[in-house]
Image (cartoon, rainbow, N blue to C red; front, side, top):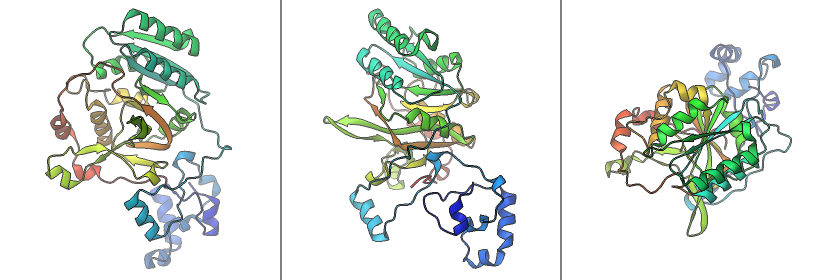
Length: 358
């Protein structure tokens, strides 16, 4: 990737470079003395790169800078000062080749599920959408209502159903649906999750097509005391001090207010709403039905994907509202964090969280 700004030695809104090792060696060798002296910024070494070798990566992966002084940044971090970000350009057109199979588990919760379906239909996504409804013990009238609504919105041929009349096992239900899916991408979507941003699927579809991306999620918000609040922006490693005090080693990543519009790399994503490639899901064996039938199955999958070299991304500019517990009745599953810890890579390998867009 190379942008015209590099030729003028000016970095404006696009300043990310991905290059092969040989090109890097060749470029730096031309100005070896400048590079060794520290006077050459690496990106400037590619000013003379042949344009035929340049490709563009998706909009949501491009970088922008916030023009803040060090004291202002420090103030923002400490006081949670909100900073406005420029909205995406209306001229951008997301790549939408490759369809999405949307897997929705539900048990009763009729209104939540209907609202979830309505929000999907409002997405600005021109690719094919396949809806797979996994019913886990809903009453017949609600099953009929949800099925009829899905057909009305997406057409008979686009809707598939699975009746899972067994004890709730979220992992097994998702795995059955993934095998039934016919599209290139899978969207795991809780029936109580609502896609708020109209370009959420288009943005995630574009970024998930990048080979090294394992899962892609969004800024998840919820309601607390009838007010919207940030619920999740991916998973992050906990602080060492909390670990010593007996806290979980992975926590929901709550970014400062001024960072929530960024696209960042995280340790893992919640499967309340996550997009990933179907072939990758099947390659990793899907969710673990035995050790993690319900809780922590998304964390376990994320860590297994990380162990294979895949990265996890959150698009903060795309918002999803999530109620919680809408796909099942309340359960009393005990935490199984020890099983997660036993399977996880070394903690040191999970703490290198890099900002992709800031």
